[in-house]
Length: 448
Image (cartoon, rainbow, N blue to C red):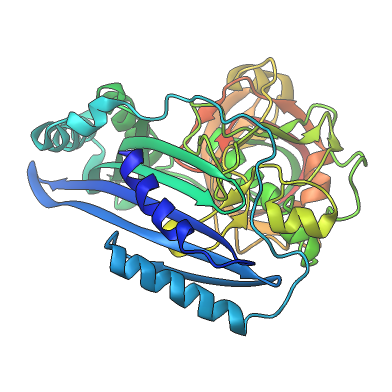
C-alpha cells in the first residue's frame, strides 16, 4: 500500500523547480462508528478519506495547499497552488523543510491486521454487548446517552526534496458508554471505555463496570466546606493536567510568549518525584507513532527530569528559531494542515504506590475524580488555574462520602512543587496523555 502512496509522492517531487523545496504528505484513513440504542443500531457509518498536503518553500517563503483526493490532476493543482501561495507569504529566515537527522525510525507494531478484517456484525455486537452490560451492572443505572464502537486506521507517507522519506501505518479501536444513574430524583452521569489495536482486545465488561461505577458513586453527593487540603487526583484527572502542562513545554509556546516555563531550562520547577516524558515510541500509548508530522523519527523526550526542566519539544521551525534541532515532535491534523509542534504520548514516570496505598499515606484528603472546564480555567502564562471538580472525601485513608460542586485552585508551579506521591497505577487513555494517581498538598478547595 505504501508503494502506491510513495509513487504519487514521487510524481509531485519530480515536478519541483530548481531552487524550490517541496514536501508532500499522502494519507488514507478508514473509519467506522457504530452507536446502538435499545439493542438496535441507531447509527452506523464507515468512510474512507484520502488526500495530499503539499508544502513549497522558496526563498524562505512557505506555501501550502491540499487536495482531498489522490487524483493526479488534482494533486498537480495542489502543487501549483502551494507554489502560488508561497509567492504571497512573508519571508522568514527560519522557514524550511525538515532534513534527515540520522535518528532511525522505530519499528512499532501499531497496526493489527485483525482490525481491518473484523466484520461489521462483530463491531455492532461489541456496541450491543456494551449497552447490555452497562444496564445489568447496577439497578440504579436507568439509561444510556450512548454506547459506541469506533475504529480508525491511518496510512501515510511523507517525502521531500530535502531527503525525508518515511511511512507509517497505525490503527486503534475503542468502545465507550455514557450512562445515567438515578436515585431519589437525583441524576448523575458516568462514562467508561476500553481501548485497543484489535477488537478482540477490547474489554466490554471493564468499560461497563467503569461507566456504572462513575455514575453511581456520586449519588447523594454534598458540597464540601472551603478549606486548604491535600488532594489526590484520579489518573484520568492527572492526564488532563499534564496535557495542559505539556502544552506549555513546546518551542512554539515559548517563542510566542505563552509559556510560564520560558527561560527556565535547568531550573527546579517541581518535586524530585516528578519526571515527565513524551514517549510516542511506547506502543501502549494512544498517540504512539513511528514518525512525526514532518517524517522524522519519533523519539522519547524527557521534559522534566526529577523535578528539573530538561528541555522543550520542537519541530523543524521552532528548533531553528531556538538554535537547536527538532525533537521529532511535529504534529499535524492530517494532510489538510501544516506541521505544528506538540506532545503525542506524555506521561509521568510511575512511582511505587497504588491508589489505595497513597490514600493510606495521606490520611485525610479529597480524591478528585473528575474536573470540568480545566482547559479554560488555566492561564498558561501565569500558571493560575481554577476548575470545577467532584470526588469523594478521604478520612483516615478510606474513601468516604461523595462530594460535588467545589472548585480547586492553585498555580501549576505550586502544584508541581507540592506533589508528595506519584502512583504506580499507569492508565493508558484515549488521549495524548496517560495518567497516574497524584497526591498534592495544600490546595485551596472552595465549596460551601
